[in-house]
Image (cartoon, rainbow, N blue to C red; front, side):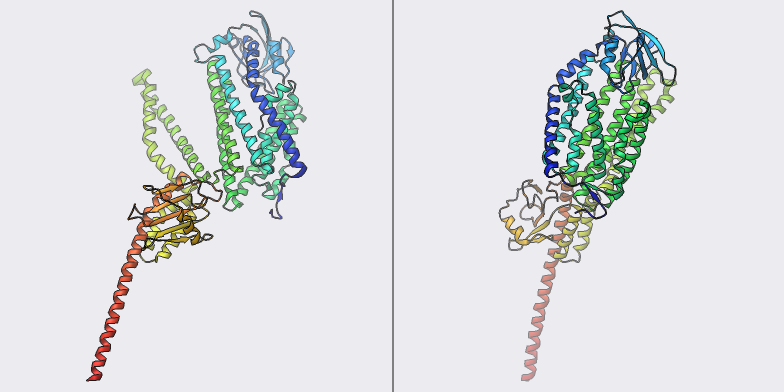
Length: 610
């Protein structure tokens, strides 16, 4: 139940839920039609770009609001056309900014004919150049690149279809698994890929697509403020909501396209900074548990989305500024690949978080991701710096071979550093993001090593149970010890009874040879760790219940549990042997005391008789 200091978006129900289900059914159908018909649309689109290439132009930004062009032939470069020039007019006719098809129709013409192109570079005055149409420019542009226009186009189409299928799957899973959750509902509406389907059903759907895109942007920005439970936390985040429609409407109110883009980006940047701060405060104020793990997972997915998105953006800019079409094609493919990885990272974060799948693997994922990122950031500049230094120093002595030698030295230095750096970085990330598991793995053996010297067996086992519960997120844990008579004695964590453990053990048959058993289908104890060697050295088992979200334990957790089994078994054996020796000493002392008492009694009787 929400606190008084919080505003909350309520769960969907009644008419609202019915309308949402009906809308999603229609949108999902349109998206499915778009995916099924995408092949035909791509084939037609590929055939329609012929006039553009024949006119010696390419559009690196696609159907951009402000249309930018780049040269596609040596003739265009010789005439002074530069990558990123803004297209003003064709044969004196102003170009329609929002209609790439109309632009291509203006560029169409027979081979050998000429046309006048008016362009502008930056803030310079517009200039007009004359170009010749030639349908063979496309073959010349891709010659020697290892690519053809068809291969490039269909590869990009494959990346886009992958993104569309993943987005549709994300929307469908959220719709089916979390139908009443307002956060899942808004993200499902944002994820549905409608562009291909709408254009197939309604070729003039440009305005509708623009409107739906604005609605999706507003829903997504609202979701950031209420993720993951529908509450506005901190409370002041609700005052950011009026800024969301302003960000979208400003594009239609500004006097120029450039002003609209600049103002929108400024407002969006301010909103995202405030939302990121609120998200961090929400994470800090959330107690450990499922909700905190949800926030961790979406943060991990968002970081991946941002990083891959930045890589994609940089590669796209390099592609647009490339001097040759071949170079631009390869950078463009790399940009689309990075964009697909960005989409996968965000969609995986959303699904794992909202559907609460593998919530407690977030720390392990963050630890590994941080380790790989740090190693890349450390070794990349090391390789580049070594390569450059060696190349400069050896240029005079080795001439053309200096480049190959410098690359070899750079790789050797990086390879030499990777082992010690990997060990140190992994240790730091483990301590930072998996501190509980590290403490269990490193500190528990020392703890039981101290307790075994003076504590009783019950105190030792209680300490072990407590440390395991702190290090491994589990609903319950028990230790099942073998007694001297062959039976088993259970010791359990709170919320679990010994009778429950013994009843479960009656139907359990340990797997021979396995120190750590795993049974994902066991609802009570899916993980069991043997204490001691095989018969007759086995002294018992550690039995772990499932995680709070019901998922199975991760690799790092199972590895830590396997490592602590031997120290625990040794400590139990030492305590038992010490208790046995102590019991023997006590029994011997008692026997001696009884004998002394008997002798004293007899001696007293002898004195009395004398």
